[in-house]
Length: 375
Image (cartoon, rainbow, N blue to C red; front, side, top):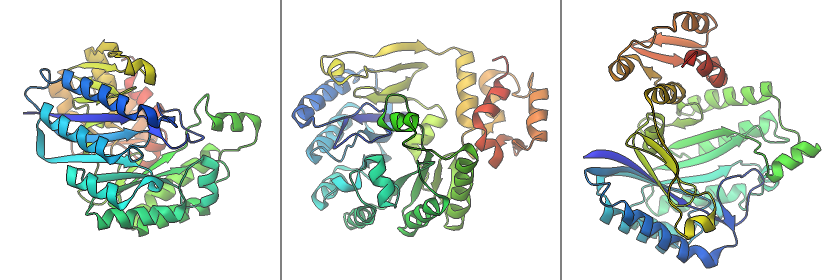
């Protein structure tokens, strides 16, 4: 059986966060049923194409999947299992907001097979949470973790954000320490990206919000690496940290370019050498819009993606696998670029892998451009 990762998009949320440009909509309870029926039809339409595959990972993202009635999540998993078999040890992740969880929902999720929760904590500072438009408080994060443990969840992630307007280093350190103190198995730490068209972008443009400069953001990233390492979390990807054996297998499938299928509006896929995505608009998806911008990847595309994604990981780029896949040593034609990057302390070659250093991770985009050269 070939491994497959399923991504299922749930585009509903209680309110839109100030920084969010994802495909998500608040106050649409009346469309929940219609949306899931469209999603189930899409899933059923893949039945024949998925013969010979098994779902190694499943990930419900959003939006806020924990906002909708738990019955929708339960039924979606039942229908998915009827279309493609799940691996015995399948990792099944559900994203959620701490302010939307209840013991009853958590029990239903756990009984349906969900075995990993990813909670959007973002910060443990109530002032920063309010400025971001989050609907939960710092105290509710701890309460959500306690509820999840009581329901039997042994694999939890918290999402955290840094580089926020007005965020000082001590606030970030306090957030890191508070998250680690909860004893979760995984932490994701992302730098704020100010997306065009969001309320946050308008605040920054007007001067109402001032984001930290690059040096401050890099200092926050280094603080995460150091403090989380001391707390027992290894950095296995630029923005992700885990206790041993608790790396997110679903996200690793993305970074290693495994086959993944996205279901729901705005969901993206890489399946059998093609990239495609569903319509971004909710109504466009509901009326039956199919996959858009289907792109058959060339070998050059595959090489570029492999460099860009593998270098995000602490594992790095497998040089032997590169030669087996593309027929030439990775170093060929890159000798000068590699020499410059190694001399600058940005990359290192060891045990058959090319890895970025701590400084290289901070300059990931520039390093990738140097490595790609004339790709």
